[in-house]
Image (cartoon, rainbow, N blue to C red):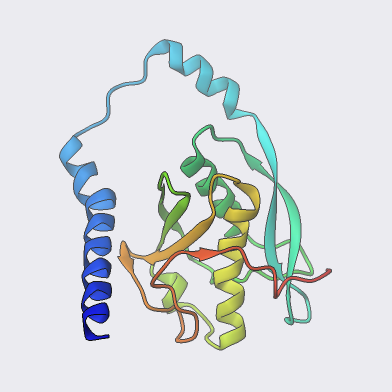
Length: 191
């Protein structure tokens, strides 16, 4: 039993180190990116106006459940880039009478998707510092994020929320965020 705790702690430390390496160390070591070739510019402009319909999740007017709402989101070819577009739309003000589950001022810092289909989404600290607290509000925040990514991107099976580049135990003391979470529509109902 004790050995299992040691292995789990070691795995978490290695995972945190890998996240740090992927999000902070490697980008600094790689130096400035190469300029975009003119041939690629044409492809980028073709995709620039393209949009997809994405299902996003907001808190109902009565505050008792999440409600799915379809929104147009800019298209991105790479899965991580598309996840970022979806999340940036999710962070915008909700359509009335719905309410955003994510605290105002929260921004997406970076998104990384593994070959296994786990997305690591790094948010600014406002996702914690501006959070209203409470178990239901925390569930709504976490699953509006997790569900928005997993419902729209078949390549992503689970999402782990990071804050300021670090793994966190929870946002407000109720939902364990130390591992990637799968889609969960338990708190989602009709608008």
